[in-house]
Image (tube, protein in one colour):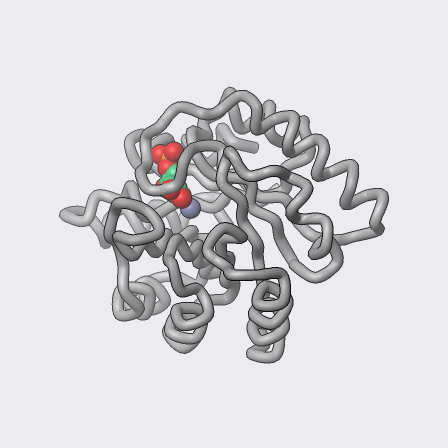
Amino acid sequence: MIVAPSVLSLDYSRMNEQMDEVNRSKAEWLHFDVMDGHFVPNLTFGPDLLKGFCKVSDLFMDVHLMVTDPSFFADVFMDAGADQITFHYEAMKDEESIHALAKHIHECGKKAGLSIKPKTDLAVLEPFLNEFDLFLIMSVEPGFGGQPFIEESLDRIANLKKRLVEENSNALIQVDGGINATTGKRCTEAGVDVLVAGSYIFKNNIEEAVDSLF
Ligand code: DX5
Ligand code: ZN
């Protein structure tokens, strides 16, 4: 199991201190939410901030693009140090463009993830089960931290896990939104490999909160 603290909830007035705590914790990934104000009604980080995080941490940089033009921003964030680019199914115009972007990310030597919002049918992932390193099941509407976990996500995770096993896919399942010790445990029981948590980690003692997710 991998824990990926989401820096969306980091206290930017205490950035060094909080990053030291993250680096000391058992977290292996750092989750970096890129929002463009169009795909979601919120605006977050540009590539220079990711470069800064790369300087202060050796964690795996997990970039979650919530933007209307993932093909453009994938390159921007790979150049800035992303180890993995996850983009949204809903932002892409057709299946072909999803295949093409996954291929491009892999050709750049990075991992590729595909995400779906809570109301998107799980079946849309079917053509891609063997093409991505990770599938991200959003357990809140993307855009903001601190929202409650959507219960229906558990069935979606279990169904996706079943399909990945049937297809002999090694892809990881990630969940993002409303994760704490309780919801996190239920998600791992349902088949999740990577837990993203923002407010739960950064609004508590960071090392203890990460420990509680295992
Ligand atoms: C929401 C983001 C999440 C967010 C989760 O759109 O993708 O990564 O940080 O925040 P919490 O853990 O507070 O729900
Ligand atoms: Zn995210």
